[in-house]
Image (cartoon, rainbow over all chains, first blue to last red; front, side, top):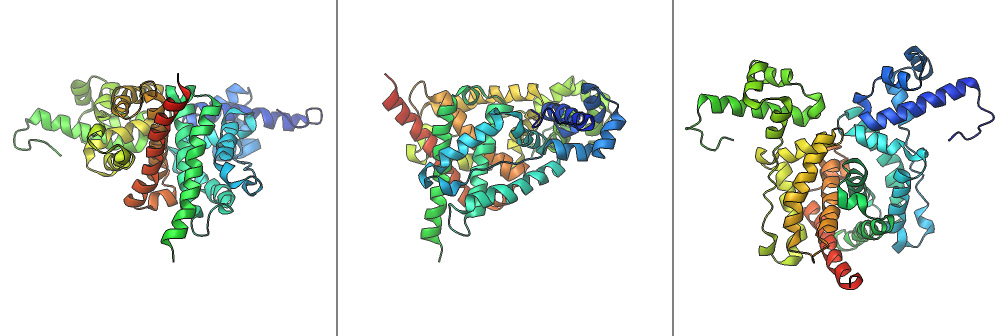
Length: 199
Length: 199
């Protein structure tokens, strides 16, 4: 979990322990449902220490829900494999190591908290739209990225949050095939729309 | 709003007023965020009256979040129009009159409350799967309905809850075209999967 296990100072270890407890509780209970006191009890540590390290509950949340989607360079894979590639990457963010936990934390809390929803908008503008922009014509990036995200967030909602059985029980390969084809469709439709409807 | 405005008894009017206040507050704040006291203040009425009419907060929520998807008879429209038809119907549930408000209420609260998530599973099993079953081969209904719901819930999440701008700002017609094609794709893929992979 820690990148340099032998080199961490005591203070850095404490910061890391607070962050991991916060990630677990924010993931389980959402931003509004998890209190600083509960997070402190889980470490365990005095709540005042959390404030010393992170300033406020919002500062702690921002650190715990830091999202780096680490999107692959989509220009480096054949265009018609981009859909499946994106889905495989998305599954890895949710099912892989803890480093991808920021997105689940954000998504779960964004439904009931406008500040958190705003953070999702930022991640969308700063990470998703630029990653898509190499694959679709100029002017189509935003709507195409929006449609792709609508399918991927819906997948996350059904598979990981609601745990709707047919979607939760499909194998990774089935998801990559079926949802990958949809993402590919959105990419292709963006190209066709630009070709046929625009001046 | 009321089906027989001239015939409602005083008690029925009270029940209706409580229900509408509850729907508004459960929609805005979710099941956990809205209290019986707040709902009573919005009517306004004594909180004890709410208990008399609905028994408990859970009973009130069940009545407020009653979901009748009123899914159209998909067998009566040409099969290749079913995707667009489903999307049009789904938009109407969210954007139309108040009668479709149960689904938004459920979806918003399901993310943080397991009992509410269970209600979504019921609606899925009892209303969505049967509606899809006429359109895809036996054995494919569940996974196909699950994939369709993953796209439709993701659409609702981005368009109405997160209000992600490219998805929130698309016209109804654009959504029907682009998402309708995806739903149609899921229906067709279910038929093809059954044809090619199954014994």
